[in-house]
Length: 251
Image (cartoon, rainbow, N blue to C red; front, side, top):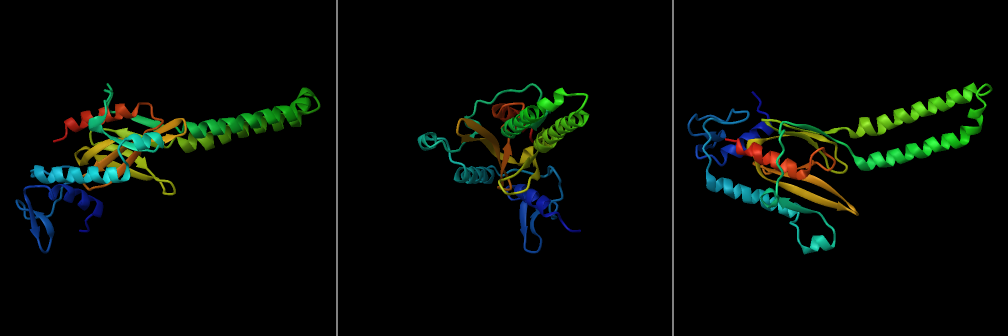
């Protein structure tokens, strides 16, 4: 049976730091207890962590994050550049309800689209006002005006509500489910299990007088994932608080 490469990668992220690992020249990394390749989906009942190897991997993940996203310092304060702050340096906020589902709204696009709709509305009023006053003789103009108003509503729905109500982050007992993307790259669905997270924190990105925020997740597979939480219903510090609480329950 063909093995899912992503699942195998996830399994190996545990096997390589397990005291029960064994190297087989034919099969690769196997379990010294079962003499088989890993077959777990979420957790392995035989997993025994080698703390030294795990710590080395944590440091490696941190190094990868800081190579990509520098720490806050005087230079990035002066030049208003992005910076990363680890969860250990953040004063996390506690959230009562941790099993939440939030929807991100892009406020910038909302303001731009609303402004365009407003200009279009006033344009219709100014250009059609005189004809609209002659109700008896200009029913076609009234219908035309109504059509344009309906069109504005459809454009608003398609351009904002439908398009930008799309970045859902779901947190449950299994892990974090979200969509990530970079500029020019299509959105990709991601699920990060709690026992997969080694390092996490907040990436702050300044934009003139505004800031955008991302939760950065460093995993056991050495992936560095970015989760946009800029316009969520809760703050980035509250997300850190949720992750802190969830990781306390990880075996």
